[in-house]
Amino acid sequence: MKKRVWCLLLAIGLLMGLILFGAARVYVVDFAPEAFTQSDKKLDNPDRGFYRIQGYTIKTEPQQFQQKGNQAGQDRVLELVQINLKHFRSGQITQTGLENVERLFSFLEEKPLRYIVRFVYDWDGNAAATEPESIDVILNHMRQLSPILKAHADSIFLVQGLFIGNWGEMNGTAYASRENVTRLAAELAADTAEETFLAVRTPAYWRKIIGGEQPEESDPLAARLGLYNDGILGNSGDCGTYVGKAEDRADPFTSWNRADELAFQEALCQRVPNGGEVVLDNPLNDFENALQTFRTMHITYLNWDYDRAVLDKWAAVTVAEPPYEGMDGLTYMERHLGYRYWIESAFCGYFPLSGRLHVGANLKNEGFAPLYTANQLTLTLVGREERLRIPLSADLRKLPGGNQREQTLAAQADIPLKALLETEYDVYLEIQAGSQPLALANEQEPGEYGFYLGRFCVRRPDWFRAVFGSKALRLYEFALPDSAL
Image (cartoon, rainbow, N blue to C red; front, side, top):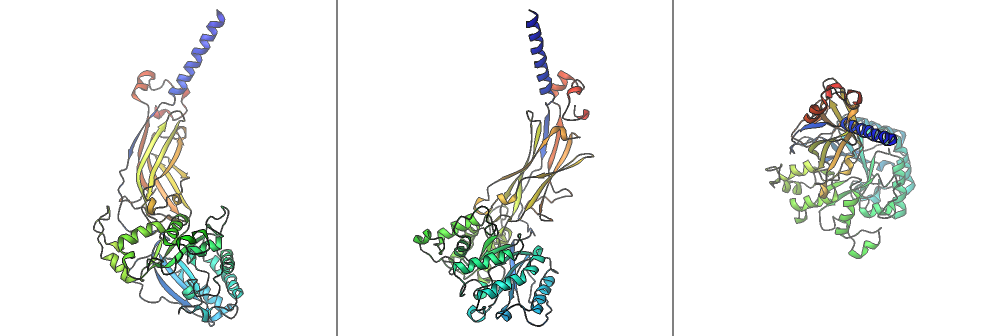
């Protein structure tokens, strides 16, 4: 009999303990989210948009550099710099030549731009007349330039080409074999900073260098090697970019047909950049056709000056898509080159069993391509006295944009309720790309702590107060201080 009584008392004690333990976790979290609206405004984010071209020939005597041509009329964050090394085709770049290159990069860094860099030996479409007669000369030039390229890596977005071909476009060259381009790409990768992207002229060159369609996961070159295309939508083969037939799909080292190459780029360029020039006014580059192609190719950057006939054709189009109604087609293209992230909604939920809050925002990418560089999202909770900054694990590179622009990324923090010292907080989201805050395509403007997501308040439910009173569970309280009861 006594044993049964003790068992009953023990069971009652355990039940009461469980009730008290569970009751200690009973809270209501009220959340007043900000209502987010997508904007059509211009965003001056890095590594995307229209570029203009500047060309410099490196000479054997000392040089000073100055701005060339008319650069007015188009705000931009990118510039393509072509650096001609033809005077050194017979041997090493002289010490004076290297000092000139160093002086050029120092001059370029006086402007608030990031650079697409292309080294060439030819500007006339006749590489055979000016390219070095030995690939070893080119490889040595890369090695000589390495300290300069690494020292100025912060201003270089990517390096286009492998120094070879007419206009540096890897055609009309004696060094187009798989063996040669593989040697050149490996050398250039070794001679540039790890964060500097590289780009080759066609998908076929990419596959030759990497060794097929699917690189090894640990291949560092594949993680940096993108594409550039100076014949975009010029014709069905993008002016020699896609020249294969359907049956060529079995051979990864040849050019494939257009449909297969576009599918290849849609997958590849979720990881590495793609861009170039749209050329030769024709129905393929009419606004709607171009728009669909850019979404598939994940286009990040385009030439502002060439082909103006095509760009002016876009400018004559009026867009009807919200929130861009009434905008001209060229401006619409500018808004969507590269990445264009925006906050769709904010959320906050409390899970009693875990004792945690889930707080964050749903993000989308309206642009043609993702952000390719490392980024950091931070949630800041601002109370009356406390400021709590929480780094998030979300990575914007997982939102590819383009044809996947409806995809959503939840950027959230899981916060133990017991970690909070106050009962009411304003919530903010900040995004950094490198050391620069990233602008978002929302009507809302960021404040001191980033974009305001809303305010949450933690409280006991009314029934809890009626049953337990405001002080009853003080000994068991573990989540919040007395002010939460």
